[in-house]
Image (cartoon, rainbow over all chains, first blue to last red):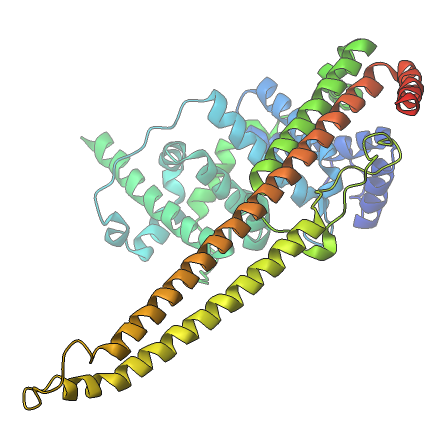
Length: 197
Length: 247
């Protein structure tokens, strides 16, 4: 992972030593960690919260929360950036739910999931000519579904890591992804039909 | 767990890239780290306890009131809960005659039971029970004899033998009646004795409770006095000693 400062990415040993020192009372060293990951956190938050000021505020909250619960960080369970992303994910969702209006829910017919074949969804979502429609369709999704799409398609993170960030099971994430793809397919079709009419 | 193949979805990836263009350009401001460290180094607002804001005498009075309340509630619950529960003899303690005078040297009061009284009551109850049993066996024996006599009576009262006078015949019946009456009387006496024993037991428990309450009250008062006037207490103690010597 590339850091913002252009330096070589920190090894986990460095991080664990740094965290140990911070926990021992050298709180000033947390600045190093903050500087390393602030941009990464802010970009992740910014995907859900487009306002830069708000995104920076949420990033601050995330890093403060990370500092306060640093003693609970377990390097055996997840790496520090993954753990930090988990905090960012939950803080961003919390902020979004508190400050933003709920997205308009597109009504679906009953048994719509069966109505869309996997091949149809594959073909439609692979089509690069419908990017604008897809963007509109993504806007109709719930914030946690949008975050899941970003983590999977944009960050190219493995499902195991996403499970760690979102605190969901891998099985749930697989089925949720399938559900989101089919929903996007139907929404894109609906938008296309509306535009034609 | 259901595993799916990794989705390609090039169109969706492009859409997300386009959508996240603005977010990818985001950078924290120059003073971001400074503000964060300032927030970190700020002492967390902790709620100051109300007790600390009170003056010294207020705390003292509060502590005394709280301890008295605690003692009273303990006393109340002890009376309610352990009212008629018999404590095992191994855990009982006899009441010392001068227990109220040397409160300071003693540990907190434990439940006091008059051992001798309880033991006596128990032995009397056991005796009563054995006598009742004996009486019952007597009654059953009588009943069996009556059963044995019944066919004889039937023979005697047969119409083929009119020469037998009815006034002379019920001699064993009369005897039996007498013994029955005696047994009944004995039973009634035993019941009375049992009743008296129970009454004695109740009285003993009441006495026990009264003694316990008295001691508790004295201890409460002593405690309050020691909390409020620790210096005067010694004087009072010496004065009390003098009074007891005089008496």
